Length: 358
Image 1: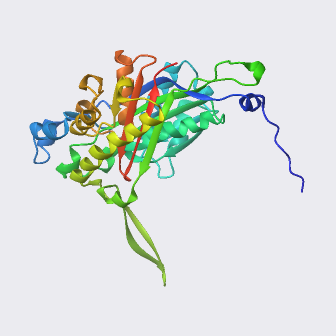
Image 2: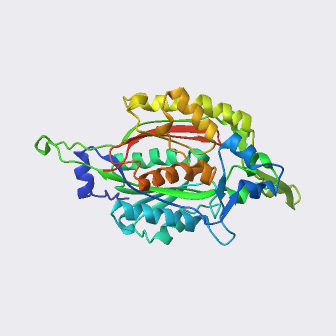
Image 3: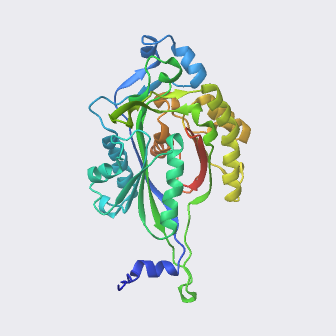
């Protein structure tokens, strides 16, 4: 049998003499128009606006209607990010959809690709719950740095309202729906080509990722099966998923302990200190967690970006929604150094330090 060797493309040849870097060139977000306030929740369960705000900082959350799909919400955020980046959908060659609530258990990334008209892109889902955006950013960077893809659309999107027990006041006050997206591109600036090298800007300055499955039961959206006999001695598990269950006290302790630590590890990799950070964007789970993390890192409150009061916990969407809103408001400017950290189910947690813009 003869083996055909695929010739190296011109782009791949160029990359043999270059170092690809990643730049983040555009952002976008989308949230449902319907809003559920704390006062609304007080008519549903035993709670109050004061109780919720004091413990979480949340005032409102946006919830998708039965006719809205996660794929459509993700595509709307992705379309904004592509437009902001100045490229077309057909120039996107990879789409990463970070979600834990896909429309289809087989994945919704390809559906988003179709809705965007990104006909040249491969698409897949990445599931890391509330850490999904940070894990996705690191994954996108590896594809770009290796030269495999040049234009990557990363979307964090979740509709956890589908999986909330709305009679459980410990969890129903927390979650909202939304999607946020960024476009990551390869950036290779010309260097001393005569010496066979080209240097690139790289906006992902450092990162650190962790998982600890021994604490998995602290935050779950678990499958529950019921035995069904098919024939004698052959049975399968047929079932559904339970609503979200959380040990809030343990998750709080975990986040307050681990998030400052992982940010410091990422800063060390980037050869930076907290004094170099222009903005801190944490997963928008709880204002008390964000305040505690900022205090432990000695980061002033004016550098902490928060929109948890408006949207609640939107899981993988929370960081990119907050990022996009800050960019649109003019808070975040090109060249600003941003520290992010996602944390949640798995348990998983991670941090990425990056520069915004070209």
